[in-house]
Length: 107
Image 1: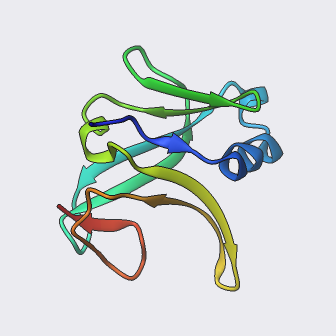
Image 2: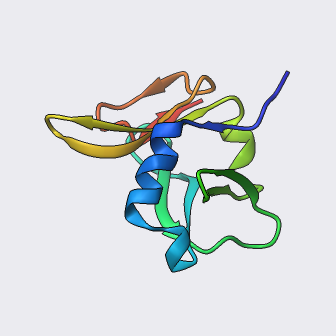
């Protein structure tokens, strides 16, 4: 069964720290052609647009456009802090491979 992506509490908490909703913005997750593996994630603060899937929690919103949605079915959007830096990450069960940077994948 195909399910929309989910967002972890940690990702919503980071958006709250940033104050995205207070600025009228949401975290946009999009998939575009390119990158070293064929597709790449675009992650940015943006305004929600008509037709976007809106995932909400802790007063914050993550949006996915309808074109990107099939690529992100059952994915988990998270926020991680590691020695190399802190970033939003996507665990995507649809990706057959991904590159070391974590922003590029193939299906």
